[in-house]
Amino acid sequence: MSEFILPRRQLIARAAGFAALPLLSGCDAINDAPVVRKILSMGEVMHQHSQRALTDRNALAREFTRADLSPTFRPNGTRLPEGAAYAAHAARGFADWRVTVSELVNTPLSLSLADIRAMPQRTQITRHDCVEGWSAIGEWTGVQLSHLLAAAGLRDRARFIVFRCADRIGDANYYESCDLVDALHPQTILAWALNGQVLPIANGAPLRLRIERQLGYKHAKYLTGIEVVASLDSIGSGKGGYWEDRVDYEWYAGI
Ligand SMILES: Nc1nc2c(c(=O)[nH]1)N[C@H]1C(S)=C(S)[C@@H](COP(=O)(O)O)O[C@H]1N2
Ligand SMILES: [Mo]
Image 1 (cartoon, rainbow, N blue to C red):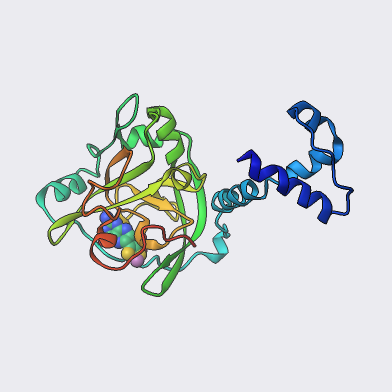
Image 2 (cartoon, rainbow, N blue to C red; image 1 turned 60 degrees about the horizontal axis):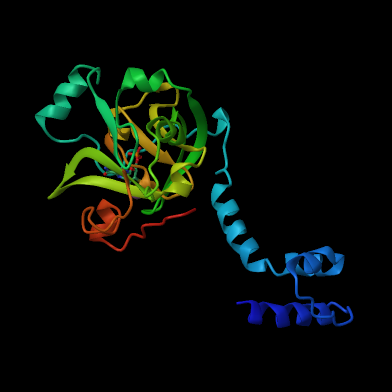
């Protein structure tokens, strides 16, 4: 590594119009020379590239005003999960619904909607973009996923978050997943309200994911569980989502 870096530093120095620098043996001596220190920082271009990629992914999705709200927020995919269990929950106003946070966490959680509403809330007006070619602007309120993950405590091997859903489509339940960059993004929330009203069943009641820097199919509705895992290989067919496993939808659907 150092054999590679030293000649390159000299090259950069020459290209920058400096006289070729004497080869210094000690690191302190190198760092003490102001010109060399500048060149060393130029040598971190690779690092800056990865930093920029991360910064871009942390940028906020555009937020809108109430004047921009779509008159109706079109539902898509499952509009009513099948089965008696979900119907019973709906009949009780989801009073007994629970969402769990499990696997690679220090403290597994099982939270009611009341628990979630008692946490700090975020409201955001964003545009939802479905891969099928429609968009809608809605106001979402809920708890930041980062808050739940901090409460549960991520273990060292934690790399991905899997979102489990109550609705079955054909042979399997819907599910989705994301990495920790999106999981900890400030606009990634578990929403229980849409446009100031309790979330309608068609839009994912009682709780659905908003992951604003990604396309619509990543926004898992009817959330029942959040699993913190080291790998997606053993989840579903291993591609990280219900549609990713079945059609050519990308796992990372960044917008
Ligand atoms: N559980 C579940 N989540 C889901 C889906 C689904 O069928 N089931 N469809 C996805 C797709 S393709 C889109 S575009 C959005 C639609 O959200 P909406 O019904 O609020 O418009 O939910 C996503 N999340
Ligand atoms: Mo979608």
